[in-house]
Amino acid sequence: MTTEPPEPIDPSTTALLIMDYQNGIIPMAPNPEELLAGARQAIDLIRSYGGTIGYVRVGFADASEIGGSMGKRVGGTAALEQFHADHPNTQVHADVAPQAGDIVVRKTRVGPFGSTDLHEQLQERGIDTLVLAGISTSGVVLSTVRDAHDRDYRLIVLADLCADRDAEVHEVLTGKVFPGQAEVIRAAELPGLLR
Image (tube, rainbow, N blue to C red; front, side, top):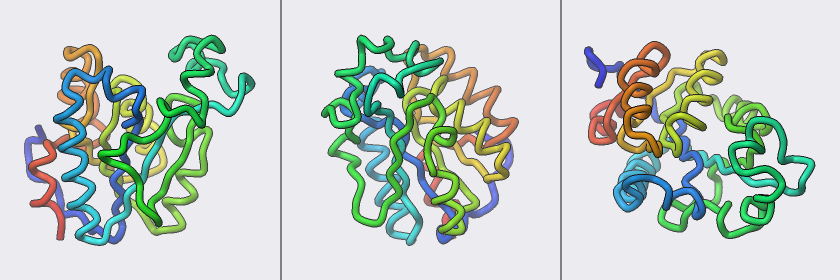
């Protein structure tokens, strides 16, 4: 994916963000079993090096939170029941479930920073590098790359642990757009970057 090898990652200042790997979203991905298995391996790897795991999920407490671009994406207030913050669809999939001490935020917009305290939690832990896995590439991943880059995080996108309904869009983003602001690798390359 990248043309030259990325610099090594310091696990003590790195967070792996598992984004929108939710019960109601995972089945929409082209290869859900592969995504879950790969994410589980990445989580276990980062944990074994003492890195931080963060989870981002979308869910709404009430109709006042469903608005703007996110409301349109999920189907407006008619979708509130399926996207309610307490509904099983909005919970992180059990195969990659959070553990005590992990960062977990619930967002109400496409990107994870605008409606959560994710940035503050990362800063409190001294995190300066984000490794990204998410569904969808054209939604949460794109929004995160743009916003996190502006916040001066080093970004590594795990291309094969991101998915989009449109395979061509996924390829354009991971192959042409993201490399301008992030290092794009396959999950199998991650172990070689950890020091």
